Image (cartoon, rainbow, N blue to C red):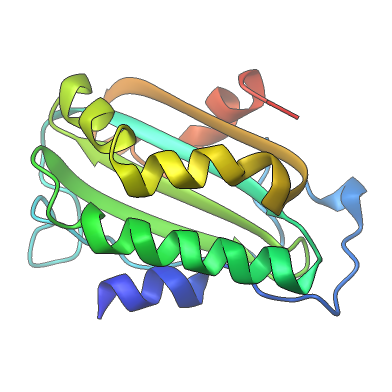
Amino acid sequence: MRLILLLTMLPLACAVVPDESKCKIDSLEADFVAADWSGPGVDDSGNLKVGSYVVAATYISLSLDDQKQKTFRSLMAGINGVLGSQPGLVGWRVGSSDSCVAGRTISVWQDEASMYKFVATTAHAAAMSQASTITRTKTATTHWNGDEKSASFEAALPYLQKKIQK
């Protein structure tokens, strides 16, 4: 069920024309909605277990083109097929803004090697290779060493701002 949520949480809103002045990598959108944490390192109360981790974050502003959004959903389905079973995965969350047609992800890993092993999967590599064609304005990905407290969308904002790719 959580993997399906990953597909449904990220935006699909071609009728929306975002006000780019309100769609910033370094601040959460007014209508930002985040899913709950998922993964083996999430405790019964829905929080990450205490620990030292590698935290990764992504921001993507999606194309407004219907076909490109279908491509995005197909790529996400591929990632969904492998993410939950990745060795070293602690947890993940997704969030989205309909008004900005943008998505954000946070993934938490036991170590950098585990994170990079996931990045190198066929599904993730396929998504990375299409990033410039399925996005609209800005994308950013980054990672840092932290703990359960630094694994949040809010904590990711300054790291993402430094990594703007487009």
